[in-house]
Image (cartoon, rainbow, N blue to C red; front, side, top):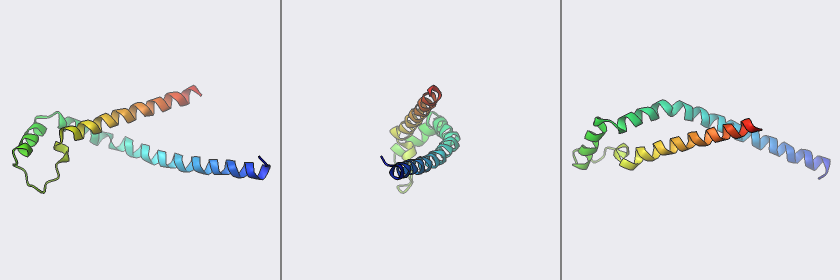
Length: 100
């Protein structure tokens, strides 16, 4: 690779890395910021209130136009699993970086 080509190549790598790092930083901040709300959802999902709300939905006692994906048995459970998986992946990244 010639000098000008090499510099151009590495300049593109630098720009790409900076863009991705900024995106990752913003996503990480959002992820950290949502954890309290995820904890609230987890508590609601294991509460008597959720069970009552779920039962009301099953019996058709809620308004037809009410968005109630939160009452899907899989909805919150999948989100909580996804959250734990992302946390584990983040920890793995941290461990890999620390090895270097």
